Image 1 (tube, one colour):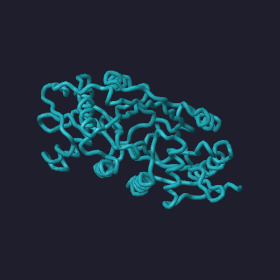
Image 2 (cartoon, one colour):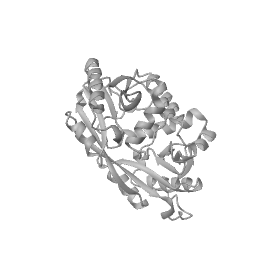
Image 3 (tube, rainbow, N blue to C red):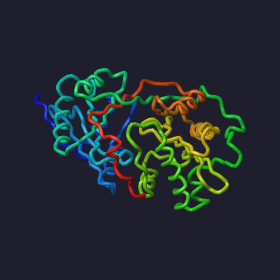
Image 4 (spheres, helix red, strand yellow):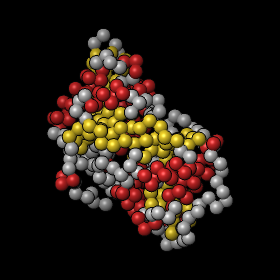
Length: 331
């Protein structure tokens, strides 16, 4: 049967989610999340770009591709690409056809750098990218903690430096007011992201983008834990996010510490407290992802009992150098 590649529409998202789920069951996705992500890109004041395609054969969607620009790593000439084909339709020309559509689109836009990813235990996906000139730039590893195997924390689980307390973000908002609390959160959030190991400079989030970030349907407000000083400043943070498919699974988002408080056990204390939040929700397991070069956070995870999973390899085609860095976005 003839393979047809066309632009994706909102009505395709349920089928696209099924394709992505079949291709990588470890990273669940739903039609709702696809729609939320697309709307976030299209509504960004940064003027981000998004284009998506589906491949059809016999009226069935058998593959998906997309290119997007991300607010957190924005440069006008940098794009992130995904091409997904489920195992039942692999090696039948679907990926090649979608890659052709992606390449033509990006060439027409004058793209200078394209990012993509593939799991290390999916060698066909790795070969697909390397065969098209992509080169590996980093590896991110999922780590999983099964709470049944992790003992409950001691009464002094926080073990914070003197002068700090742990609060959930909603409690800080109630105490300080929304504007002040979110600004305190944003300050440390941006500082932590800027110092993470990464191959693309972190674009700081604006106040508006933080509001959008926290409005995501998978955001768990009581899982946004902050180490707060007596003056109401945020010394560190960790995040728990819901899983789109598994109610008994949570995901750790960003964990980071303000520079003045690093090396004093703040991140470990926050993650210990997050385990208790998860336990109170009858969570079975927590997933987290870290760059392989992030030795301090890998050490924290190892002490808490997280177990490594196959790595997600990040690839790059072309390159935007530091001398071409975009001017800092107005905060």
